[in-house]
Length: 268
Image: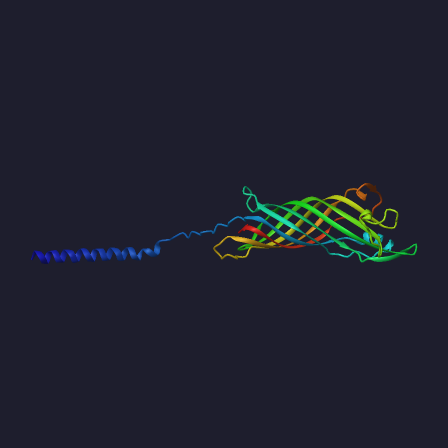
């Protein structure tokens, strides 16, 4: 009899628990939950390294060519190919900001023209060279993983030089007459030089491929850049000495520039 009562008690307790759980289960639909959106933290741009750059520079040459043709020479044509180096490094206290330094130089030339002076043949040609060093600040905007759009501005200084050379055709020289015979006034090397200041705003696209694997550091980045160099010219000097006046204002180191290059270092 006692065992029967214990069984009845256990069964009653079990039914009570089941009924209680059923009631709680019915109330689960009344519960509300707030969804928490987990935002993926964006990693700031990081880059430190240096590499090689090729730039196609297109200065305005109309005034230069006008003077060259008046002297019986051919015309210069763009683009002026400039090569050099570029280095970058991020600034830790300013996210996505980096500093840069670049040094580029190159030249273009005319074809050679022959002249007859006092029954002797002379060959004349001209060339234009440009070189500059610039320091800049860039800001990296992430487009995709390891792909960045980077606006920036740089400033620095440079030198533009226009050189005209004439020499006697078929004349051999010895060590005591390097550069031509001092007695021949028709053999010369004449230059106009200007040291200038420049500002260069521009926009770059850079991509760092996963050469070592997707989970490894990026050690190379490739770069395409477009910008406009604004030059503030100084005094033109003949052969680096005498100041030349009345040089046309259109002869300057301003123009569009397009760059391609790569850098080696550490990048994200």
